[in-house]
View 1: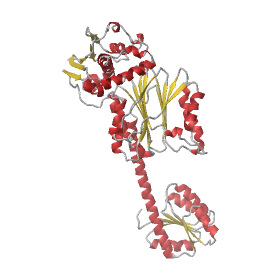
View 2: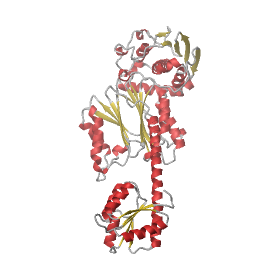
View 3: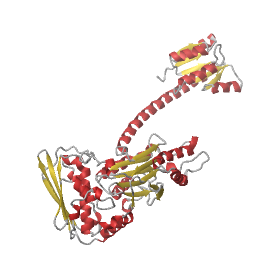
View 4: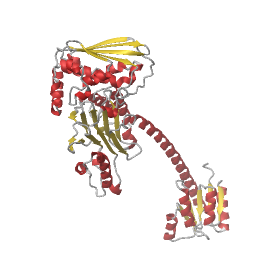
Length: 570
């Protein structure tokens, strides 16, 4: 639309007035469409949408008020200014002109200079409206592209696993809440629920680097504490002071039936016990992520034994802080009551969402609402993870060996398993075996460290309390460790179309009687200890101890059937 020329519809039943008005408008360089009543005005509008309409109020067949009301309805989001030119003088009649879609009015006889000024003013407003609509369409397009990228980054993990349920109800296009789930190399599962301050894009933008760190480090087997430290350091660096991320993180160890839980700023995480229908609330024990500088952030997750069918529930404050029409908070008391009222654990997830929705009623929620639940299951429900790699190397190193020896100072503060796994998966053929490799590495390394170097006795782990006591002693002895060492010798060599990997782990301890382990299986050890070596034996082609029992050698050859294919019912 040119700023010098507008298309103007003139609707007036007086041919004299219509011709005079047309002459005035044309003299200003505008194009004119004429109508002699309201019905014709509607027809002309349908044929060609004008930039401005000059409308007489009183006309036969259909008056200008009814025609204006219908034109505004049909114009929709388009801004088509309507100026009434009328002989009406009383205030109520002029007010009805505006109430029926008019944007301005002039009383007859009109002043030519004022009419010209009004046409020019509404022409500018029409152009500004068109520009705003164009910018809005472009913004929506860019927002949709950004949301697609955001969803690809933030939701690329393992949220579709059969033991998980989650619900995200954002207040805006972008969600300030984040839910992440990823398999760990040992077959376990890491969960993360984050709630950034604010809503929409400003709140969601921090989720992208957070998700990249979570997925990358979890796939490589880093401990929860390391993942949280890295996320905190990144958010502390990039976010404005007033923006941070309240969060909770849960590691489910499906082999040893343990949950490691950290809560920082979000409502308490609930641990639901399936056998007695009770709940334990794990309260926040840390500041949110992105608040403290890296040197002062020290996450301290807590360990909880779990049994199959036990569940963890995580939620954002959008649930407990939901308001009803009376301004009341939903609160943790109502939340806890739901667990008491629903003895069937399979109904809890839907019952929570329904209760919140009913409580809010028609008042609408004023925060992002997010709920996440995970059930403890056996490994065969999930299978071993097939972690993806973005590396593009083909083949990789085939004939190589390395030795890594860790002394007491390093053993106390450094977990070498993510580093070693990263090196192993440089071999193209080993990448799809990363889950098995991590399980073997973790079991043999921890056996050497805990029993050989630290002198811990697995018999302590005979029950849930003993399990917690065992890991407290582990932390205490690691902190006080003054002597001892542990060596990893790794050899890989090509064989035909595949290869052979040998892992040998030797500790400085006195060794142990391993004869009873030789024929053990996973099902022979249903308790809290003793299942690890049996699982390792299933994953390896060969597993042998030296006579003293302080050195173990595991051999894996590839290509090989996957873990699930090797099971009796696989």
